[in-house]
Image 1 (cartoon, rainbow, N blue to C red):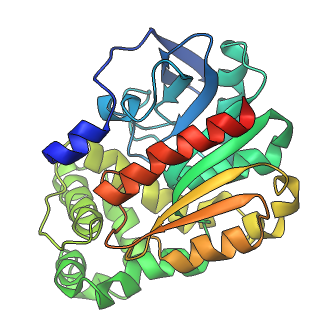
Image 2 (cartoon, rainbow, N blue to C red):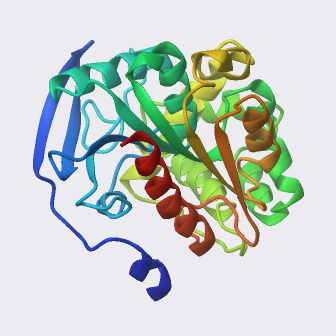
Length: 317
């Protein structure tokens, strides 16, 4: 639940200007929203997970007079169909989908906004299509490496041991040697009596580690299914990126402006990754937020995201 202070920092609730569904092939169709000022600076919002989907609060991050915002549920997420599908669902598919969406709305260039997995996808898109990018506002950097996946599965427990113990003990003892593979088998089981408890356990683990103040958080609901299933699918496939792909290709986007917002106590996406990214990006500005973890809606993170959007708008307009 958002605090009053957090809610006051956000722009007022608004309904989308337009909603549409785009068929992108392979049996997938995507739910897409257009919000804000039709003549404003184009921005694409990339949600996390993969599998988290968009929500109404995401529209409120953007000044509706300044930005033309495109938000969409990535394959298998939110209101896109088929829900939770892992077939034809790769990073390369999502990059291609972004460009289909861009062309559909007649946008030549846009600002890339994304956090956590959204930062991974945004960077991979930028490396693939640098000519389509105006700049970047990124949060909670995740580069899709094996080391980061291993950290998520095993080493977050050094900071949140109670959450990790619940995550591990949701599996039978004989399945705890390879958490990713055994969770994936359960998440993709045909029986909901097997897949849903696994999804709830995975999501609860991640949610419990997302903010600076440790809390026992549930992982139920529809989003738990897509979040857990798609994260496990991407993680066991190395996020469909060659290890080190993003840092090894930063020359493709290093000339573009960026604001990188990072919680100093982000345990899901540790700050060293953001630091490494900015070292390879001369035109990037790193905002390290003390007393903040991973969540975009923690007060310090939220404030820097809103400020970063204003600065990027000034640079690209």
